[in-house]
Every structure is written in structure tokens, then in C-alpha cells.
Amino acid sequence: MTPLESLVSTGTKLWLDSVDPVEVEKNLKYGATGATSNPIIIAGILGTGDHDAKLSDLLDAGHDDTAIAWAMTDYLVANAQKSFHPVWQKTACNDGWVSFELDPLLEDVELGPAHDDRVAAYIKQGKQANQGHDNRMIKVPATPAGLDALEELAAHGITLNVTLIFSDEQYHAAREAVWKGRQRFGQLDTFKSVYSIFVSRVDAYTDKHYTNLSDDAQGEVGLLNTKRIWHDNQAWWADKGLKLDQEIIFASTGAKLDWQAPDYYPARLAGSDIQTNPPATNDAIQELGKSYAKTVGDMPSQAIQDEIDAKVDQAKMTADLMEEGLAKFADPFKKLLASIKDKRAQLAST
Image 1: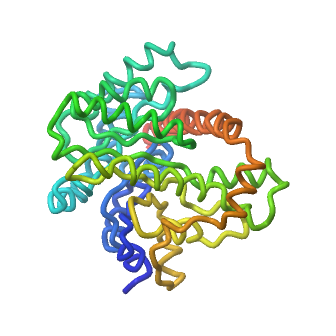
Image 2: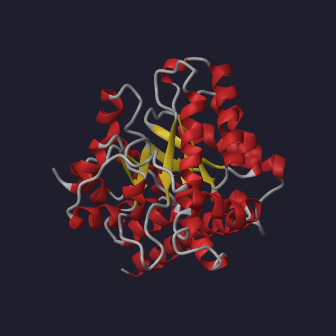
Image 3: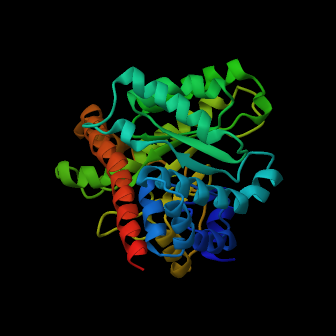
């Protein structure tokens, strides 16, 4: 049994944080059963040159850079969906999904529209991106506008991945809006939803801003936050009588602190729900040669929990991480547009 097979055997669903066809094929062999995407991933894939022929066709058709960005995103996500579709069929919609992120520029602090217009845009884009797809999840951020769009999207039967979650308040608002909307739609036997909790970004933040934390507590804040929400999620859905799992996605699982092993987060979140690991993290896990046991339900010691609760201002941390997260949310799409502009010039010269 390989290390990743061992991780999956604990109960973890392994999703790839990429839709690169090469990585999808490799990670399917590792045991991956789904995938997520975002603009920086798409930009990296286009930078390889492997899809220049498709790009050239879109350029020749006269599309502008924004239209090409969305066309290539749709193309790459749809290809990944085909790869994972057998999993989706085998699990009766419980797995085998690929996430499609809506326009990050809606949250651009300089360019984004007013709140009500953002909500309307999320709903419109979500319906369009979902049209004609069965194993595509629509990824919506847990911002004020994103949260306000969730009920209406769910009420149209759209399967949602609510992302950019750092706090239990965001998670509660998201799950309740999604559940309310889905009950309006009905067809609860095929109801699936996931909630992406960012882990390592929290520990990178506390490492920088909370140097008063003990060595034992540093690197535990993101895990404690995530595990508390995971326990909450398990309890909240338990009495709903649903056929499919409503799951937490453990996102941002790549190690960010110098002392952390490559499997620091995957090893401590093993045993349930979904890990969206970057390709480099999965490759590193394979090379470590370890085996894994279920740990997701294991909490830090009470002393560490008490220290974190006493020293970390959760509200301020969430606000700061959301501000940082929104920049990281919008800026990659701008970089994607810039990369397409560069590719346009490169292909024109050849």
C-alpha cells in the first residue's frame, strides 16, 4: 500500500488542487477522486504551452483576454470532470466532483461592484457555469455577497463549494443558507454540499502575529479551528436523514512554516471528509513512505486549546485573513489575464 493509499484507507477523500491534465492522470493513480481549480492554477497550466493550440483557436476567433480566460477555465475543468465522472457515477453523486470558481473580480476591493450587484452576479454566473454539467461544483466565497447568493443558488439545485472560510460564523451562515435553499429545490437524495476551511493560512498568520504563543501552540491554531468546525459539521447534519455526505474540505493543506513536514496537515486531518492537496504535497507524501491512521477527531490538549482561546483574537484574525484572502482571491485572476496577454503576444510572434 502506498502512502496516499494508506491516507485514503483512513476514510479521507483525496482531491487534487489542480485540473492540469497531467496531474489529474497521475493523481487518479494515487487515489484522487475529485479536484478543485482557481485562476492561479489555470494560469500555471497555460504557462506550460501544452494548450497553445486551443488558445490559438480562441485567439483566431477574435475573443478578448477575459473571454479566453473563462473559455480555457471551462475547458480544463470540463476535462477534469470527464476524468472523475466514473467516480461520480460509482458513488451516486457523493464523490467525483470538480470545482469551478466564479469571477474573483467581483470581490476586488477597487473594481468590484456594489453588494447587491455582486449577489446578482454570483447568482447569474453560478447558473451559467452550472448549465449542462453534472459533476461540477460551483465555488462561491464566504464573503458577504457570496453568502447572500447561496440560498438562491441552492434553490436552483446547484451543488456548491463554499470557499474562503476561516471562522465558525462564516461556516454557520453558509451551511444554513445552502440547506434552506436546497429544501426549496427538493430532490434531497442528490443533495451535496462542501465547505472549504483554510488551514495553513491560519498558522502562517499566527506565526507572524502571535509570537507570544508557546512552541506547543504554534502550528495548532489552524488545526484547532478546522477540527472544531469539522465536529460541528458532523453533528449538525447527523439528524437530517440525507443520503449523501455534507462535508468539510480541508483546504490550504500545504506546509507553510519552515519546521513543518510536507504531510503536516494531511496527517493530522486524516480519516474523514475531503483534503484538497496541491500536487507537490501529494508527491511529497508518496516519497515519505509513511502509513496513516485516523486523526481528524483528535483535538489538541486542553492546555493548548485554553492557551489559544486566551491569546488569539479570533474575530480580528478572521477579519485580517479575509482581507488578505480577498486579495489572493482577486489578484490571481488579474495574473491569469496578464498571462493570456503575454501568450497572445508570444503566439502572434510565432
